[in-house]
Length: 196
Image (cartoon, rainbow, N blue to C red):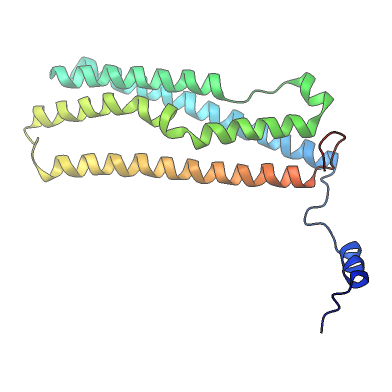
């Protein structure tokens, strides 16, 4: 039987290890560096994808005669530019001064900023493409005469699946970042004024 006396609980409490050991400063620096590198790689990929979307849909606007395809292509280009601008505006950027002062707080702030970006990906990343893609697909359907066919519905469903997949993957990544933030918070020693 377990000893539930005050002395037994007190001993058990003192002998138990905390759920999270404080992270060493070098480990936090290493994680912050890897995180910054991952953000830079992601941003480069996104900007390259934006350039590709702009080139491809500019060609579509020139090549196709259907006005809805032209308008849709221009709207997709505008959406891609909005996404690139939003990414540049929202993404966390390194701040050498802040990093030198408090690496743990600096890393936490970058994690929070990226978590917010990923959690709201539907608003700033997916939504700008919706009008252009809808008009573009309607233009394709009109030009090919398959407006009411199953092929058109399949194309729309495929696009919805892709958008849904992007949304789900980003929400999952945001949840992972929330877990890292919680781990960092739990591992940080309490400071004066925290009330801990």
